Image (cartoon, rainbow, N blue to C red; front, side, top):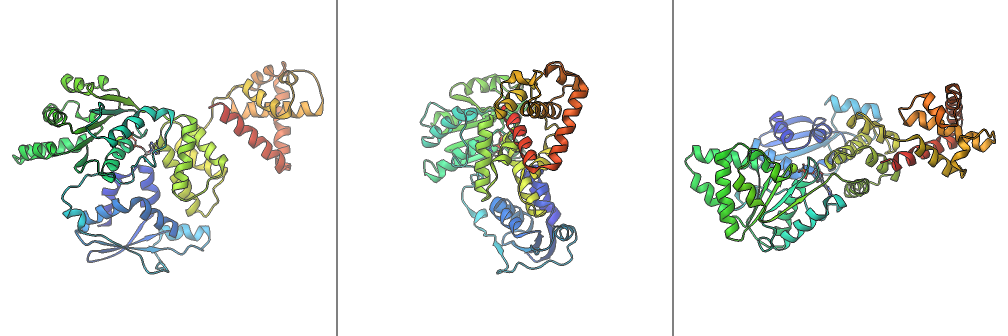
Length: 458
Ligand code: ADP
Ligand code: MG
């Protein structure tokens, strides 16, 4: 039964979250509609409750039926790192949670609610971080949320690559509309679900019920409409639904993974309808936004991350926000499961599992510039013959950092330092490494220079 639950959960969370938060769970027993699961720590339990409450609830209701109950059993926290690890794998001696054993009461109200919006309450404007990359889309979404059907942004089409926040933003509209009572019948659906439901309606000879249902909606939000491609009958039905809603001044919000014009296999008449409203894009987040998002997410999870950890992650994880979030989750999980403090080392380990190539494209000139800036010497001095101690140190550090941070050969590096040969570069690197072994202060200096260089090169 637990495996059945896991299958459903797996389909609803990203793989990393699944691995982090669901795989370590050990099912202990099932009594009637009550299932007891073992989790590795209090933090783990709180995290599940905080972030996956509604998913777990829905899943259990689906599998066990109405009135399903969930009991958590938390493994002792003060055991050493190793023991904690073993306990996760071996469900031998679970210690029941000390405080009143927690029970999630799953109410039956969910089934009997008259109109289920399908919205995930987690997606709000409040926790959507604003940045240059999403400014227009966010502003348009807010305008629509405040006045659904009443702006010229109808439909509102949000497009952009994976993990950039389309689903978050379009659901935020729905949640805002409901919270502020701007309309009552808000409905979120993915284009896949729309398609499946439509096909089922045909099979059961209930197409008119299907159409009537959709035409009764005040705010219709359809996610990932690229999946309508090639499904002509579904598109046809959607086209008519669209027209009916639009004519009735109901709001339509759509998302899509590319500019609508580039959608292949989508009816031209549908695409031309999209031009009636506003088409807004979401771009990949810039460094500043990535930092802001990490800060916000950490804050929301109630943890304080050292600035250097935030910067390290933001510098290295660039592709999308889902990955950024996944990285943070892994970081918190690793720190909690292995009982380690969150520092740059831990961050490096986690980032390495997410991005294969953590090197940042850095130029020799940039390294020289930053090192000289630190030592307050003019960059030319690195190339000059001078043997003044300070210059020698700066030169050696700069060479070492060039070796560590660029793909340049030792020969090339030497050439950039006034035509010195590669054995000089080797010697410099060895001296720096020696010194790093001896002095913590020196190590910290190198580390901070490295960060500064990587940061500036993004
Ligand atoms: P998409 O639908 O574009 O693939 P999602 O909306 O699913 O992307 O976003 C991926 C994850 O990143 C979600 O957990 C979402 O909450 C988060 N996210 C995306 N954009 C932002 C943002 N601007 N601020 C905060 N979280 C964001
Ligand atoms: Mg999405």
